[in-house]
Length: 245
Image 1 (cartoon, rainbow, N blue to C red):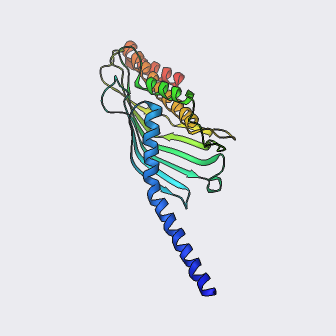
Image 2 (image 1 turned 135 degrees about the horizontal axis):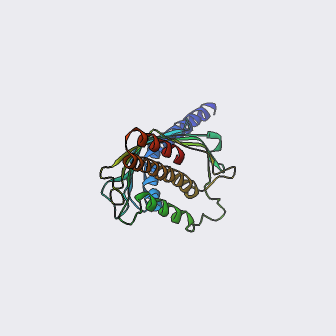
Image 3 (image 1 turned 60 degrees about the vertical axis):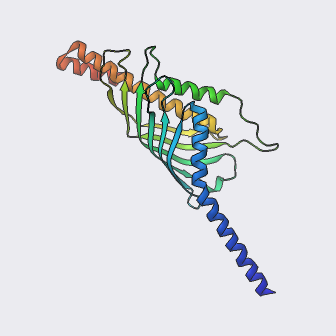
């Protein structure tokens, strides 16, 4: 009898290990698919992911080369690409509400900022799409089930670069090259947590707002430098940008 129990227990462990391996091996593709599907819906344009690597046992994940295409009416190509996204999840909160993400970090975002003839940027469009999607009624959860809620303790964008084409509404003929300042958010979602749509809107609004402000500051600096000229113009331009930042 003991032998039967031992063999049965071993069989259960093998099945459990195999199930865990199967889940882990499929999880990367599932996460990538969810990002592409829901990201495209929220932003109203194609979202693509290069690769996803999730480690359940460590509570960590890495998403590489997340690309968001320009909305309709703007140049072909991407509005932005996020080089690498890393996140750490508090394992004890998996299956709880809210799920707590200890840190979510985006490294090396590359932004292609563009303004059309009407003065509206591609980021204005993406921001508007995200806000509209967040305001739309959520799909009803199964009866008795609570909606997924997430709390992000620390969120940050680092070492971003912006290529800004404002030639349609300014005297700048060449794209502006702008180094984007770090963007940091604390306790996104709060103690109760936010739905994925609410978290996405908060992050997208912060990101797009930082891009727009930095481009406007650099553009204003360049205009002052050109109009005043010389070292005085450069110093006045630098001072104006510092005030606007």
